[in-house]
Image (cartoon, rainbow, N blue to C red; front, side, top):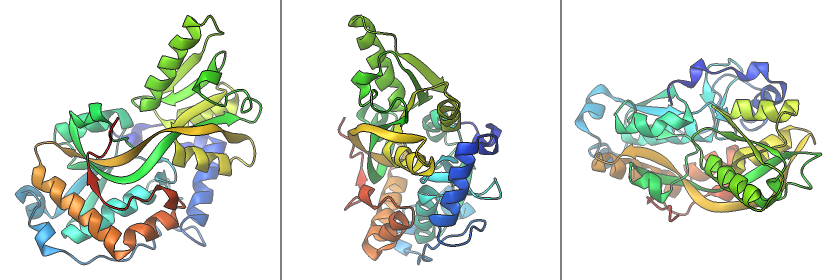
Length: 303
């Protein structure tokens, strides 16, 4: 994902902006302030720190790609610069256990695999599903279970209650996501059955998707369940979840396949957060407790 700081900002999008501001005030608890967090400070684990590659230990920092427009996992704070959310909280806490600062780099979703493979980023945490085909390119340390869901306009929600119900509709998806493949496959099924055309609208980021939905250009958006539920709640009835979630897979932290000790360090630090209760506090703070995993797993995606 070459830097998301080049993207059109949510300030141009009333729905997304309202969502961002509301989440900052409510999910973080109380008055909205820049970079507010309730995550307890973590103690360094020397054994896990020793697993870090020498260059990361020597420079004292870990570079992580993150998103900025997928609330409540990642979003911009009220300064329109600082990235907050469950994912930044998790990776920063992991960094504390490993005794390194975490340098967050805002990046486009469809470039993070390449960025991790080329060592542009040490890791990436950006609502990416841990899928078998992606495991061939990077290693995943899974941090949350999730699924895909449909966010539809109030007018279209009764008709678009599943992928099969999308024929004749305009569907927004974010470039590089698994949902692009889902909607592409469904469009072919619609055509093969002689049903009205499914128009797939692919945008470089989720802001474009929500803007298309807000302006009526799209009838529905297909994306990760956490952000679909979040946007439905923030829309005050303009949009709602349609049908049932599908394809249950974990989200994972991306790590270069060659960095085996870094994988062990990240997995161990995440497990420590699970064991000491910090992981549960982060998920509760961002209202995504239903996504909690019992253990930090490596390449746990089975589909």
